[in-house]
Image (cartoon, rainbow, N blue to C red; front, side, top):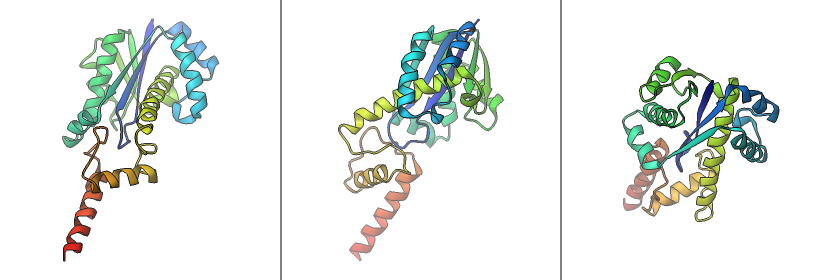
Length: 213
């Protein structure tokens, strides 16, 4: 039986794409993933992720990566449908890999509802679980693929812009966003739908008004 694990990276970032990764592997190879020390990408160092990534794709029967641009993420966030966006792209990934069974990491509080959304665009049996990247080896492997590809994209952007990690908790990222708004020059890779953008805009406009007075 061929099984598929799917996970995402970059959902909470204000910069860059949302990355969906799917891994197809025969169930007989799961022990190989375990022997490599595969685990949730968030529990690994950057060096370990890159090393495991190279090993995982050698073992995998197939894998797919989908990078969803910031402008498409914005379109769904404005409609409060980010979960639907993830489900659609996960479903597309399943269609390409054609497994007998698929495991996905649920981003919805209702994991059954999310699994049903994914299965609407795929012919595979879909099992959606909370924290699947910590519970299932095949999803953990997918999380590593997603994270490494997301990091590579951010690394390319960092060569042109001083953007930090891409998360608003990072002072470098926050300063970058603030300067973009002040200069009225927001790059294509910034997610305009994030609350941080609204908050900085509001503060900046208020300060401008006070200056005029």
